[in-house]
Image 1 (cartoon, rainbow, N blue to C red):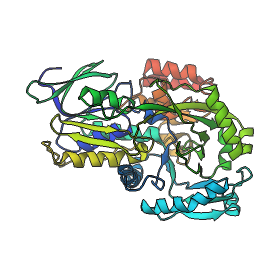
Image 2 (cartoon, one colour; image 1 turned 60 degrees about the vertical axis):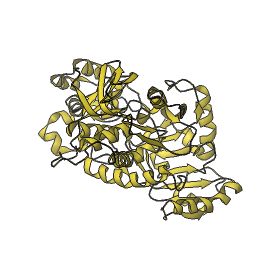
Image 3 (tube, rainbow, N blue to C red; image 1 turned 30 degrees about the vertical axis):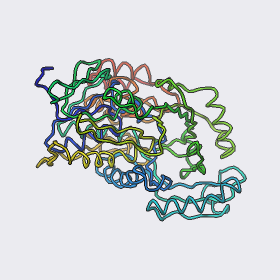
Image 4 (cartoon, helix red, strand yellow; image 1 turned 135 degrees about the vertical axis):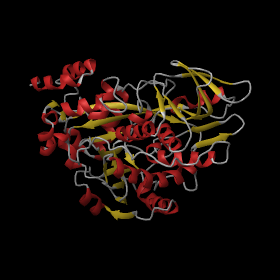
Length: 472
């Protein structure tokens, strides 16, 4: 990279928030570079969460988070329709199991109204069980949240990243930032990364779990990220009728508690745990977490735990000592911090990008929109509620690869895998392929199709998809 190769803006972190910011800024005349420490977009915090599209009903009123979650709910909902990101408008029910929790429901409804969400209703125990008959005994009352929805976090991240690149942004992966240095004339900052130097007039820090480290490179000591592990259990698709909507716990000071929720892929999940760690890479599951979820889950829905758990996973949230997002512009250093973005960042991501763009309007950047922009990308559907390729007779007739199953648990076809390899941001490993297609994501967790999928990944050749028909 030459000294003249300087982007107007470098966004560090290709999770949902970073990709949303890169997409928004790439819609202007600015040159944008998106830098990611891992080998793929959305491979950090963004890939492992509860995947809920939040109304923001339970956010702390009058915070930046509450404002941006509410705005993001509308923005992402509209964007999902444009791009085909899978969303199911299931609604949610917050269930009270004790007198104390029941007494808290009016306050939670009032909080929702202060956040501008007025659709919540308090219902009695009979109505709770009418809506979710398989709940365990002892529920006293509930609070409905009809707007809560489930969404595909994988496709959301990939759509935003794809859109950013189609608008002209550049993506550099395997580029962990190790240092930042302003040029002597202050014209740009050089980021030292594991993929080489990257230069930008402005730097946007959307580095998630590493945001405090990058913030320190700009001379700040204003927050510390605590990695908070959340473990979840995933149940077989046969359990989906038992959980028609999202079942939420009454929140406590520790968090929102354990939920039981359908997933966009047709499963049911239970979780998360909430465990503060020091290791920012500790995404392994634990025996303690499994025991905790078994205990909590059996009390919520005992019959669910008579069914098969097909997977467990863990994600890390970037917790900080604040009850709000930390977004700040340092015009002197041409530096933007976007820190402390918790799990609500999935919903708020596009609104955060809009907010950051608004803050940058008062700087030396020219944010005039481009006269022409490409249409938003149309993403492959990997949601269970929509038409999947293996069901689409017309599509199969036009291209038989969509009728050849590679992964029988998830009904993933050779055509989908070929398309993933040929996409704007192709997968670099099996996890990336899983996030794009659901391959190896089902009951057998790749035991049946894993070797063939690995061979396709290693070859990267569309010509090999015909050989997948040999899988039996």
